[in-house]
Image (cartoon, rainbow, N blue to C red; front, side):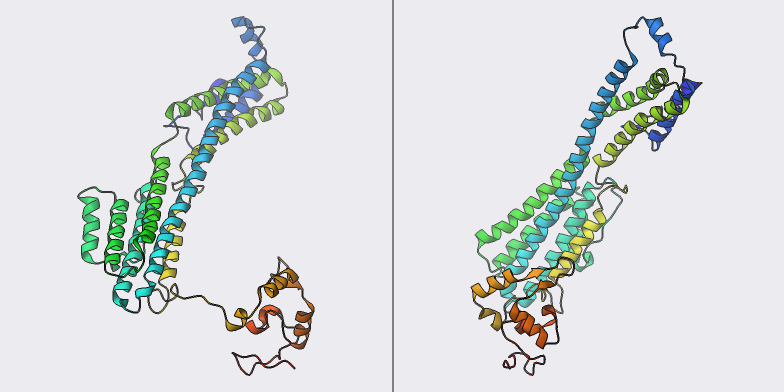
Length: 400
């Protein structure tokens, strides 16, 4: 009956591992058995089988060496799969967003002459990329019933939606590959129509970044499609069950105190089972568990990035902004800029300069000790003692 107690919670092996909470149950069973068998039957076993020269320490070292080696191998593989999975998803998202950003920049020159065609191209591109990214996450997700929010899929025309549905349901084509081909067709069509005013050799880089994103997706699918080798998982499971049997007898032959035998029997069994379950949890990073990658957040971040490109009253107004410097900054000499950067010492906590130059201290005193970050651009370098009030928002008042 005592022997049954040691393995009562651990004999229900399922698939590649054991059921949830089996680590704690198996460890408690081994600990209770080690405490109740504190006098230890191991000497009798040694005498019956004629293994007097085999000490308890040697047996324990041999079994723990094998189990530790296999667990270390599985944990290493699990961590590698997890970090590779999150890296591939970030690379896929970065490649596809970079492609869309380049296409928006390439079509900026035609907003004045072919505004309608340019807006149609941008809106279609954003919706297709969002749908492609969500479909890619759906492919690698272990639960295929989960769906992801996409950027206004019903903004596409009926012919496009029907084609996407028929390609998936009737023909069984891969949806990500179908959408990627549609995007390439859309790019080529708008290059011929003059919407994309860019030389073809430069545009070929966009084709390459789209293809690299697809390669990253296929590498991520390699992780979700390929499980940890079944023979290794079963050997680890059998050795853990053997440890549940063997640990109480081993510890009871070494330790005579019941409480000490309980603790020493519990710790190694619980630790080995916990490491095994932690490795099994990390082996598949695209599931629904708490420790899996947040794929919904990946999709939301991608949609937000695409929204940034078409933000504004008109499509692309924010992303088409041409950055420039003010006229005062253009008059600054490079030596003055370098000297100013050397003179500034920033406090990392507040983000404000902790030491100011003499001109800046004088300027700050006359302005009522205003921080340089609260001044107008004309005051930011402290090259002149300006008045606190600026009658002209463009030209600063003359120095007193």
